[in-house]
Amino acid sequence: MLETTSKTKRVFTIIALWCAFLPVDLSGQRLHTLSYGNPEQVGMSSAVLAGGTGLYQEAVDKGDLVGAVLMVVRQGRIVLHDAVGWKDKARNLAMEPNTMFRMASNTKPLVATAIAQLVEDGKMSYSDMVRDYMPEWDNYRSGFINIGHLLSHSSGLRISSLFLGPLMEPSAQHPNAPTLQLESARFGSIGAEVTPGQSYSYNNPGYNTLAALVEIVSGQLLEEYLEANVYNPLGMEDSYNHQIGHDLEGKLNRMGEVYYRRSSETEEWIPEGTPGGPVAFPFARGSGGMISTAIDYAIFCQMLLNGGIYGDTRILDEASVQLLTSPKITVGETSSYGYGFSIDNGVYGHSGSDGTRAWIDPEREIIAIVFTQTPGARREGGNPWERFRDLINLSINNPS
Image (cartoon, rainbow, N blue to C red; front, top):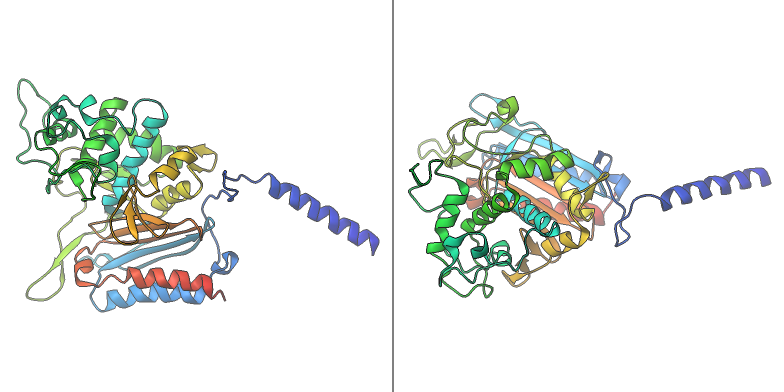
């Protein structure tokens, strides 16, 4: 009996020592890399989460959505990763867990991450004026807008289009036109309509300008910078920034069609975002344009939950993650915007106009992802993501 007790004590001592050397962030939270597991392993209910998949299957069956990929992660364990419906209904191609999506404004957190990296490297500051990098912004309309204003959508810009039209044509002075940098410089002549830093107004030109600043400061095109400093270090193998002629390294067949509106005659969703089809702009931009998968975006989110590190690769300081994901400007009664992230009661994330949404709950250590390619469903109330979120929370309160 004594021998068994001694062995047991030694085993527990070894386990305790092993746990003591597991990586932790400064808040004492364990650092995780993603792996598949059962919900019950992390205090969640399989039955309740299955109800979340059922919600989206029902939406597909009713014609509210064409398809969706769902993912829930807790404490690094992928406890739900389901696909429902079609990625291309006309060709009867089923949605798959590794389907690639147009991320739209879910690109913005990546641009904010790039800015934070350059700040950490001492190459720029959040308080720097845009005019310091773009002389076209050095005027009474734009000269007082800084980088932090652009990141928090509090710049005072009220330009509604992604870029000013028409785009520039090649000329003797600018033979490579149009480019992201040239087009973003043009915003400086319009400038702020209200005092910067005073109010929130969601603004795509601000993030296109931030992306141009990434190019100016780093000396790399936006897509090159993100590939070298975010995608490759984190192992995000299916993430790109869309541009003309980009075949996604032969992965176009994994892209889903995008369905913006219904036929007035049949009420069926009309495919209008054909993979590999023409793009609106001949350069990568910061307001949108990212292409990714649920697993890749979850890796990015887990890096944030880990305080800027994933595996043995750190791409952000923990202080930078805290800065990006803390409120900077009030949006509503309980919501605000940080630097690249919407924040509501401590939960932060973003959504994209093509039907993608991701949120991170640091208190519960949860990542939730809902990727669809039916943006029109949001206008009709056919995307049940809020009910899905409620079921995720319910699954914690009622583990099996």
